Amino acid sequence: MTKRSFFRSVSFNRFVLLLCGLYISMVFVFHNQLYRGTTANVEERRPTSENLVRKDVILNTSVEGLKDWVKHYNNVKDLARKISKLETEVAHIRGELIIQQPIQHAGKKKVDQGKPLPKVVLNSTIGYCFKEPTDVKDNKFQEISPDVFVYSAYFDNRKSEHFIRLIVLMPKDKIKKISLFCHFRSGTQTYAVEKAIPYEMCENHNKQYGGHIFSCKTSNVQDLCPFSVSTDSSEPGTRISIIKGPQSPPRHQFGICIPPLFGNLKQEILIEFVELSRILGAEYFYFYNHNISPDMKMVLDYYQTKNLTTVIPWMLPDRVADKLIWYHGQLLAHNDCLYRSITMLSFLAIHDVDEFIVPHTSAKTWQEFLPPLLGNHCGFTFKSSFFDPSLSTPYVSPLLTMAKTVRSPMSNVRKKVMVSPRRVFEVGIHHISKQNEEQWTPLEIKSDLAFLHHYRKCIGNYGMKCQKTVVDETVPFKYGAVLEKSFNLAIKELKQFEQQTRSLS
Image 1 (cartoon, rainbow, N blue to C red):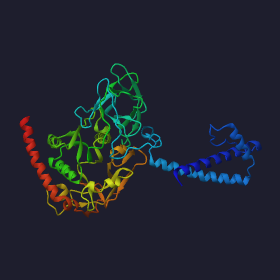
Image 2: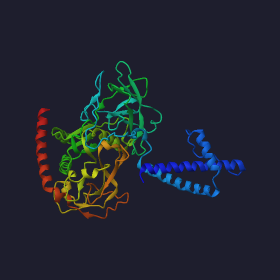
Image 3: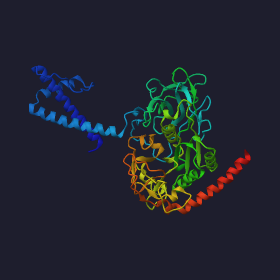
Image 4: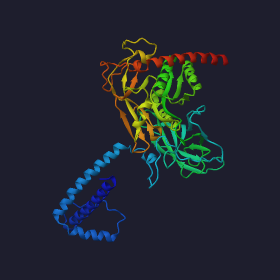
């Protein structure tokens, strides 16, 4: 049975149930029984003549026939309950107004992965407010109202209905107290004002401050620039640059987003991460700089000269202490990176510098096996395993991934994801939170195909049995020679880069 015929059947059954309800109501009214009910969900637009005809039919129905109808009613009601449950599992109710796919008319083509999107004309009669996703020199949290900060704005033309998506940091109790408004062409007069639709990100962990996505429709807007945001529909507010949306195929196939970096990692660790990731298939990297050491910055500057990275400033507002937000605003950075990569990447992996998505078949790179698996999915989730540095291994190497070959069992909780950015509305930390269209679903990759190597001390929570270990020599066996060569070359070039940089300073 097709979906259409199925729902026609359900509609007919509901109509029959409606008649049953009407019959029961009339019987109880006329014979003064204990129960006095109302008719069931009568459609408001039915003609009165139809009601009279159906009423006559019902009055001539036998009691046995009525029992059959009531039995059928219970079956259909149970079926409707199951359908409702399935729909709830597929889509979060929260935020549905933002991302719900408009009705597709006959003959209308949907945007497909990797294909050019429709050309969008972005006029600008007063000023210019668009910038490239790699233009990050002025990136900062802008306070548009007390305790309400906008970090970035993205033009999203992935659907027939276009939006400006705002990445917003604010206290959890503010979302019900304030409204945000997008103002377009507000140089000399306000041309259009749109009230933003709020959406709270899913993994704020009940901290005082959290991430949100606010969306302003642009269907009634002819000129997007200048663009500003405020909490008052009558006042233009704070000017915000808009990052361009996709109008052509992505520039690279695979890339990685690294959440906010802080502290003082050794240069060798960063270099090993980038070089092994490049061997696995990464062509581009996004690093969020929360508070890194000069040595770490030198490594990232070196890779920027090779056009491999964008380093994004990530300084949280002074009043937002670390204890007031989850892990330096990690979730906000994830979703900023998601929208930033839409024009750049076909696939975006999101994980830390001590993690690697490693194939465990004959395939050596992501390109060899992942693209054909995408199909009707929005991305992939990977199980993980700890490669505990404290455990002894037979390999002696300055490279962590070469020397450590003892791992834990698989973790079904500490998963990491690789998404198709054009198919995702919101990404979480360990899962894909919301796809951009409901038919696109996440695909979990089996661990015998690939899984995430996590090079850190094993954490025995969420059912993890750290005492059970397995020898896994995949990295030194498959990538050892080429990794050592690329690592040594990068170390050599970094030293030359440091000398040149210091001589110019």
